[in-house]
Length: 456
Image (tube, rainbow, N blue to C red; front, top):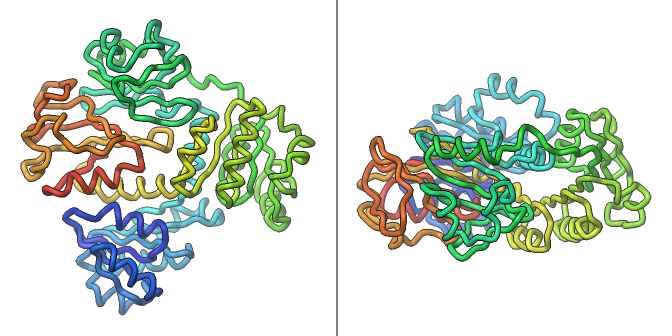
């Protein structure tokens, strides 16, 4: 597959890195020659120092022969134009990153008018994950995710008598023909090991045969939305703060935004209804106390500074606020925030890369894929003879990334819950759970021996 990426920023580079090692020909276009020189010494990609908006440049790389183009420069308008030009010149599919709130209500018009296949908005993606967590209280849209004969159910451990306090390896006695695929503890998703102990309030992801999962659901189901959330405080009125405030206010919640930039405060107040906007420093604890911090039921930090987000989230959690979420841009901080007890730490870049990878990898055959909690992904793959590193090999001998678990497997008309001795065969459909940060490594590992179809 031929993929062109215009813009060698964080998003463009991470997508390029995720695509490495497979049957992809990657062309990276950027105006900064020094940046491209560093990239070419580290990655096996073709680099072109040029303006991706120049039609001559697109024609010179024969864009009409490309399967995908991703426009990920630092300007929305430029991305829209580049993607549109590439599509007009014959590129099969084009993706543009668009972040400006002014464009959100015009997405359909932009797509149709400019002939763009997909628009990716990192801040909107993060907003969706935060909204699902603090309002819907489900990390799967309705608690159950199904594909073929397999299904995945999410519920709190205490809702199934006898489950809490057990090690994962002992849970099968209580859940025959099923497997614990992941746990969410204090908002942090983990892929558990056999000795991991299930705790009272853990959100448990159980994988198994659909009929058994549906039966289990009748025992543990929590109907609809079960949150009494009313008051939310958001620190930071940037793009994420804007989108989240809008979404929460539309749901009838009382939303209070604290932003230090006065002009930005005016912008938010002008464009959003039923949102209280306060001009001030969100790191000023006395200000937060004056604004009834302790009465808040949810607290979201989405300033442009990871350190501020981390410290404020930790402070809010220690003051007893029920749901505390931090937007964190550096991967090293994501685990740190969660380990400190904050309910959820989300990285917009990881979510965006995951979305783009699903668009690209799911282009041929589409079955199933689902983000859970903005941190992990359920992926279904089909094993082929060309995957010599996994085909005809036992699961225990596979060198999978640490945070990846193989779940139910469709073989013909049968559904199998495998153990370590199970040998994968060609045409097996394998359901997997992977941390979002491990998806690129999983993709590269599986492609080493040939081609893999990621199915969503």
